Amino acid sequence: MNVSTSTLSLTVADVDTSRDFFCTHLGYSVAMAADGFASLTRADAAVDIVLLRKGTEVLPAEQREREACGLILALTVTDLDAEEARLRAAGAPITMPLREEPWGERLFQMTDPNGVVVQLVEWAPSDHPQDRDRERAAHVITPSAENVVVSPSATMTGMASPGRGSAELSTWTVTMEAGATGPEHSISREQVWTVTAGVLEVTCDGRTQKVAAGQTLILPADRTRRIHAHARAEAHVAMRADGVASVPGTEGSRELPWARW
Image (spheres, rainbow, N blue to C red):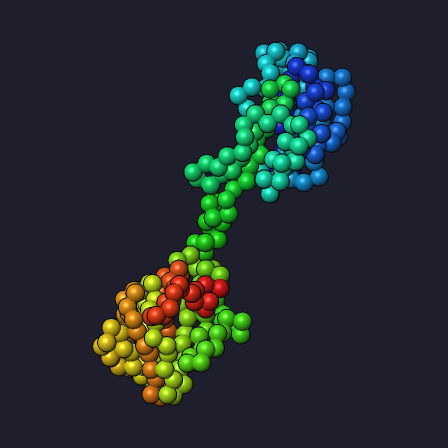
């Protein structure tokens, strides 16, 4: 089956008032019209609407006196807040104010003069089914120069992060040149360091350990540490993305930009 267009036919008591409602507030235009009939359309993918006056003989006999009821015409839009403000300023009959459902759907409703309920909908990005599909899809991250942060003691190259597609974790590589020593600090989240080249000397809570290429070190959260490289060394680090750094003797904390963006 190939569907070329979609049309919703509504039986109403007064075709003209519904026609004016859809044209004035929702951007529809009249494609065709006659006594007791109006065909409305939009240039985008919104459903076309046919309005038929109750009692018209074009309807089957058993349907002629039935009006559109128990029906909601839902239109998914962008920038729902702006649409709500526009329609409210225009005096549109908003019969259900803007609200957000627990599953991420944001919506408000209007009711036209014949009782036709129109719902404008917007999905919170992380909860829209298409967005969830994208989040579940595997994708490859290629580091670039803009993901590199150089400090006096090391070079960090960001890999996965919330700014580059991950939901929970951040990963990055660390390169330390011979003789480099990082500042004494603590991190609010557990980190996992896997040394990929050379040897790192890590002092954590007063205990010093050497971690060689191929070995992995788990650094607990909120423990003071300092990292030193006698010779050039490299490591791969993983951490929950919301970790922040603190330096003993100073106030506040700071984000790790290579882990966030």
